[in-house]
Length: 364
Image 1 (cartoon, rainbow, N blue to C red):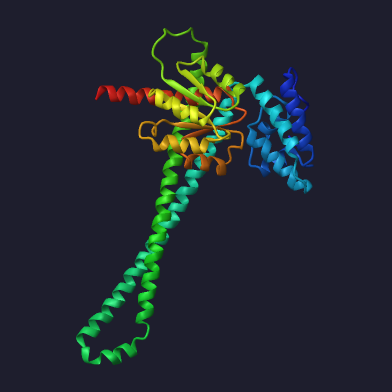
Image 2: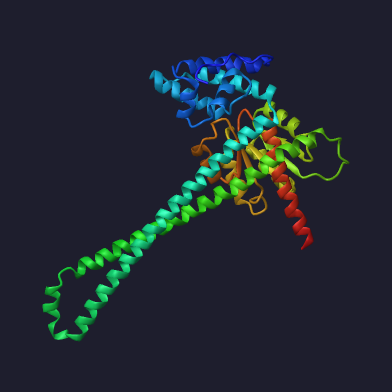
């Protein structure tokens, strides 16, 4: 596992080209596969398969490799070099996409959501302890202040002398006020940590459903065409015609009706014209009105604010970008180039949720 395995046989030209590019990058690190896998806390066998072409890595793995090579060499890769590898990666994904690759992508997202949940839980526990400590200290100060007040009330004629004997009363009051400010601040942080934990837990549940859906989606695509019926709509928003065409083709095998538009403004118009969208798939980087701004408009409208939004992003799916997406109102994200099985699984799950909600509403 320390040395590079030979390129696998019977690779598609696209997978071979990507593997060769990744091997060239990796060799610039001058370390073994096992050592690098340990550095990045990854499975050495899986990473070795990325480098011999039998598995296509998630784009985040490729970007990590670029980052580590840049750190080792003291020189960042050029935008042209990154774009070249991105194109190779996109081609490899499109020609070798499979349920196994989709499971890899979804499991990586699940691992990240689980890390966020655990970090938020630990942070919440620490904040709870700090909050309890501040409240105990405030209670102690209140007791001391009440004792002093009782003494002053009992011996009013000695008030001036007592005040001189207790010069730290003002300090006690200031200390109490400072602690109360800390309690307010810690309480806000604790609420934020608990909200982040709850959101991460919901995301874990969603991703687990998506992992289960991969096999169901696979069976659905192999099944004979269903009897035509009223299908929930999926709104696809992307300014690139090729992306719209590709996503529409991918979803055509499922029981949804894709509606494709090329701008944020067209998306808002489509949402006004129809009220049966199960989910929105929206590119982040669009001219005039980007995905974040479009999502903000959607969430401000009472009629559309509950429609789930999946962001499609080429900026990477690291926590910083995904956090901004969630803040803008997205409930999920897909990295470019997208894996068809991942897209199908995510849309299938949100469609299922939509149909469940519709049945519950009809039963009431």
